[in-house]
Length: 384
Ligand SMILES: Cc1ncc(COP(=O)(O)O)c(C=O)c1O
Image (tube, rainbow, N blue to C red; front, side, top):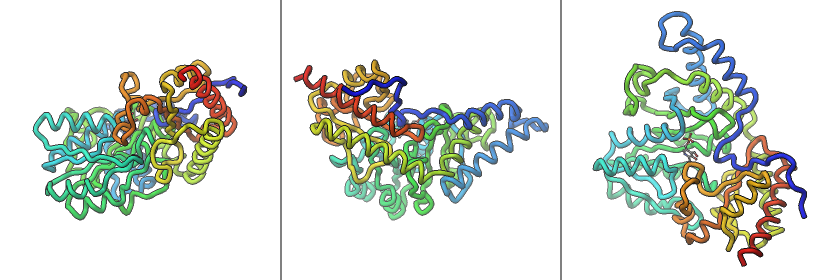
């Protein structure tokens, strides 16, 4: 019998990550010093204006984008909505994949209901977007726009965004990359890809919730969703979330100052977790490509076990993990991502996502793996 955790063990970093203490301090300082409205003409607006300028500079430096054109948003979801809304204005067909985040899929659905053509590209059994199908769709839709995620939130599978961006360029299509799960977890550069739009969200890299950004290579392509004031050059009306943006900037700076160490750390934890799991429960399968995977995600299939029962039991023991994305977890549906990869509903229900972060420790991950393995064995006997 493994020792039980004396402290909760959080292994759901793809859902959200704890803000670093320095992020909390940066936010508190912003609220104290930069409380002025950045749109105010008087001097009290200047610290907030400066903070916005600095944050854009940091985003450009860390993401290596050619321009500093970032629209601050209230979430990754909002950045994705803004991207699709804008792409729809400048294309005749939106091409996306079957495994995108719900903010893309629901936005595409809404555009479709308004008469826009939308095509969904399938994925392989490994969870990788089908490039041949994408090429075919681009060939039959001359004025298309592509929206694709860099890293899948459920499986951690890395999409071939280099090839996708090259295909887009060949066919003159606009391209949007949902980088919500990628920022701070890969050192692959966006520089060479030069996409038209990139979405990100601070709470996936130890920044605060409720703040994200949309990069636009050509800001004039942004079609605002939110109108009213002239903030952000009229591209996103509403007084900016200065403290949130300060927190995002701080989190990004910290992560990029130690990016390689962070990636190595999370990768070591993921490998430790999986090797313990596979050693103790050889019947467990890893969902998604193991070669093309982000460092921190392990989506495991516990054949013949109800994943919700396992998650509930682990929750009671103080181990926090999840099934499907946090945004849809409340709905009793199997993961559409895993189903699109060809898993049966039963296999999707039997799958659980564990995701590790920079604040996770080797000791807690070893303990988590042993506890998960014990509980899985116990449930397997019950379900048999
Ligand atoms: C790939 C992906 N895109 C977008 C989002 C939405 O981000 P937010 O939670 O900030 O709305 C998420 C969040 O889980 C995500 O994983």
